[in-house]
Image 1: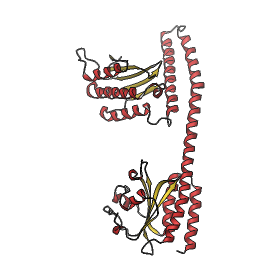
Image 2: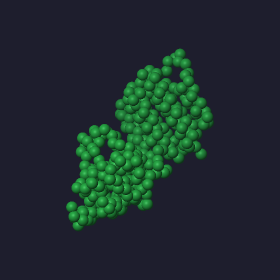
Image 3: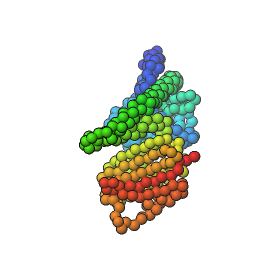
Image 4: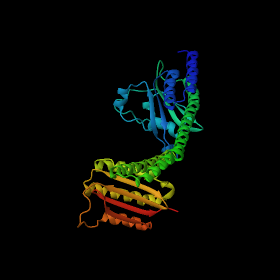
Length: 376
């Protein structure tokens, strides 16, 4: 391949990269373009993870070309950024090696890995930070990669850094647009839908006492109750819309994660309802005690209740945090002894100035109600 042809391929690759705003597509294009302009049989882009230092950063993604899916599966786990690949992690800069296996830093290849000898590595920089590294092996038609190969790949890596940053910004803009749309939907639900449902419910409620037939009154009251439940569910949705993407590691997310862990032990998925500004009303200490209580309550259901359903309600309102765990199991035996689990939940509540109650659930089952003051 002539230098003119290789330069032309480089320019085509740069144009293609600048036109693509999908980050996965950009990364794949970079790998394929690097192989084309350098004449490498195999090419890969190792994306670095976050870390406090280059020594602690490893590869979190590995995009390849030249090896089919069957070969990738045979190799097994992706490289972790050690050996020769690790040299670019600890010392970012172009690196050419005639024989990988003979290099002092070589860690060898795993079983089923294709043989590789010549090597060219080039870092990709995004805003003066190393985003990842291009790894090229097995120069076609020559024993090793040349200085010209290195210059072309370095130029490509520079263009790739700009394209990756553009794709990242585009991705962020899309996320902000979605978040803005969620906020608009939440406002509409609160200002329009809930108000109309509330007004309808009030109107129906005023008619209940004037209905002459008991069946009709019962059906009307049922309609009012269903409207109240709908309003409650919409309020839950509003809080979820407002919280999503804003606090990914907040109390809501932690509760859902804990309930998800308990699903396998219980044999079914509990129903979860969360209302109110939970993160604003709880400090770190309250959240930890609440999560421990929830874990204890679900564990008790799994061990003793023989239940087929559990409902978890977490509510923040009027300066109080309420956690309610209700199951439809065997309920409380008359001679049941108070166990260590309930004592622990009670102690956690009291340490925060709250209370914990155990009661029978209407229709069968048990209810644990844990209530503490909201954090100031």
